[in-house]
Length: 363
Image 1 (cartoon, rainbow, N blue to C red):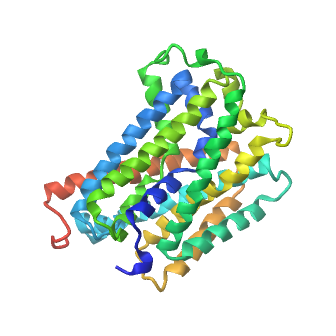
Image 2: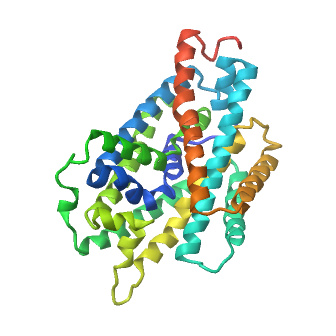
Image 3: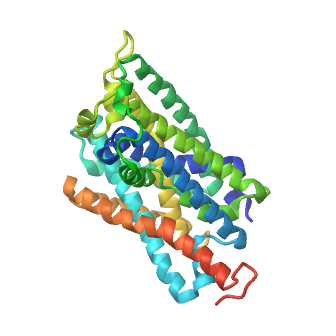
């Protein structure tokens, strides 16, 4: 294993956090309350449990193929033809998720910070920075993600300022009043906001430490993310009624918008300016995963990153309104569920049924 493409478990922890943290948080309270209402924070906790179950499935699969990445495991278990066919969907998923994340990123920047700046200029600025870092080796990306995580702590401090504004605990009472079905529907929306943990399927072979502690590392990262998301959803739910949340696209920013101090104004813009970095790391993660899924050698890797960056940029140029973005998000969601949940689970089952592991001969 080359030194510049290896990471430690410590760096894996922060990579998982940054790949899961992104645009979904800003609109999550609005989306979750549509079904779960005041029980949206319960939906987020259940989503964290569901992610943990998938991480255990990933762990069991990767233990059988410790030196292979996701797109190599598919070919090992299913054979070259069917494996490559599934790899195409895996690649498209990362490209489309990266494109959707960039589109939503541009939309938020246009709405809150730069209303008259053309979207294509913002797209170029975002993707240029993301491509530059993604072309770097994995260890460099991981180090940047470690530094970027410190900003999340700053965001938590900023959010504490909102506790001085009026809160109504009755907005979430009685607990469980939305019904189990609606809470589960809210869990679905929370799961989509937490996507990014599938990066483990590509990072596992590059961990240089003893892999026995990896499950604990990724579990701690998941607990952090689930707690982080639940905190913000809970904070928003006790600050606004359901009717108010239904009218807010980014309730967290609206929550901070009303906070004013003598020397500090528009805390929401301060929060968003800091949040730009976690939003960018999410795009970097998907650009990296899309490029790695193509199974190219080190020499051609920079060219592949540039190509994928151009594809994502092209996606952002497609004329889009709320209806188109909603439709695009719907189909990307279906694809993500297949790539993140269904395919890895089936691969694990088939690996046991056919007694496949890394020392087995290829099909």
